[in-house]
Length: 140
Image: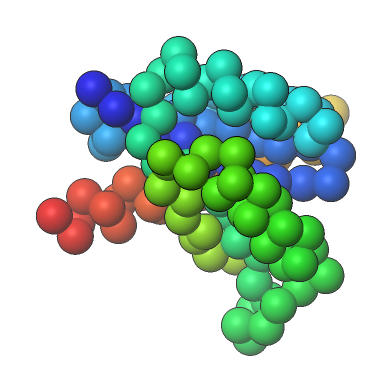
């Protein structure tokens, strides 16, 4: 069975989440240095039978492009060249960082753990993927 992978792309780090085989539940997978993202993706695409890659797309609260939108646009173009056989889907990532922070608070994590950007990146990728899966499953 195939899976869907989500990326919370960042200048330094990328959070990665992968769906279950039924494409119902998002699971946080890892956080990798951005410089290693393509080698990591090649491994995951082969190991996990990935059919779609969802990329968090930064849009401002008023729907405008942000300072990182252009970087993500370039990343998406690179993904399409590197993985032409895989569907690449951008998805609005507004408020995912805030939701990730709230999730860490709700989970009663230590303040020091809540301040680690890698934890936020992982949870953000999971939220991005779960939003996509919810949309995908409600559309069927």
